[in-house]
Image (cartoon, rainbow, N blue to C red; front, side, top):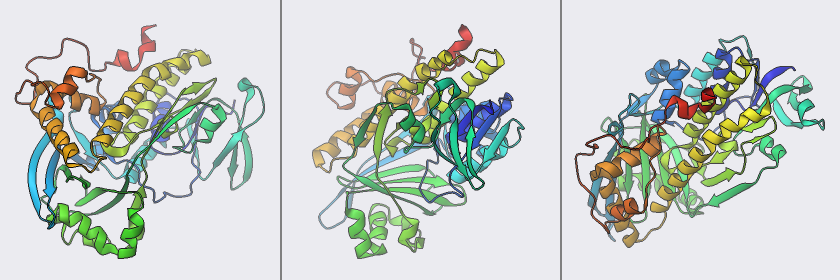
Length: 443
């Protein structure tokens, strides 16, 4: 074997996995096809579970130094009248500190900076090799146990044999194509525009501002910047560009006048990216010695900021499993079932929650807005609903919403009101333990 593990894709998922493997001296090759970072926006919001994973691989402290802590998220609803004036309808706050954990906050960090920090950590380990640019083009026609990966480098074509091949290439995954797995797709009735720009000092919290037909999300970054996400209709980007940048500025300043003079520092459409949300889930994460992580296995709607976090958490579980397999000399492919058993149901549940959140903001009808306001308000002020919402979002555990919960959120039946914290810890186990994350150790 040339390598124990070959990772195809040098993004956050691939780098996290390379760090895990390097720390256990697993002979690893990581390849990345692009010469330099692209302009495509990637996730920047780290959820609590991802912070826990980053601490496990000894990079959390430096990530915190380069990030902006966001312990809660604020929601503001308005009615935009026919004359353009804004009538305030409601304000709510969802707080991570309702979760009894050391990791009860979120954190924003520029995506490329996080990649740099992970790359610096992975580069410390002699067992990890890195080739960039190197394009994976497919596998040889050999039997699975002798299959080799074919890559194109500036020196020419090369065949590499590894014990395991990990597809971490993102949505357009050649590894997934080679595995011939089924994939279910969901499309949406809206697009997003995203860009970062300087922020006023008063904008220091995650903020969602909505009307009956408009949505903007604002997420502070270090260096006095803010990442913005603006919901638009399909085709609206073209009409906005035809009108000019004033249409873009107006869309923000109507919802948050304090952005006057800040969003205007975006001086070209080239800085603004169109995001077309798509959701997909594959039928299998593993086939023989081929493995999928991150967006290659699942792509979620960006509303809840979960895509990058699922990728980090995939690589944590997969990395721990592969390290255990090599350390104990149990490298049979059958053990990979543990990775899929742990990660697939978690990722699919979070995908469902992100999908439901997307639907909550997808329809421009006043009755739908009233339902949304009711649901958000009930969730904030019910300790049980608040806890479930933040736990499920955090990745630290799962406590599923049931029919009664949904009826409470809709205001059909009353919900117990409190200060946002449960008076006692849930009787059922809802937070993941190390045994839940790495169950093969119990064998």
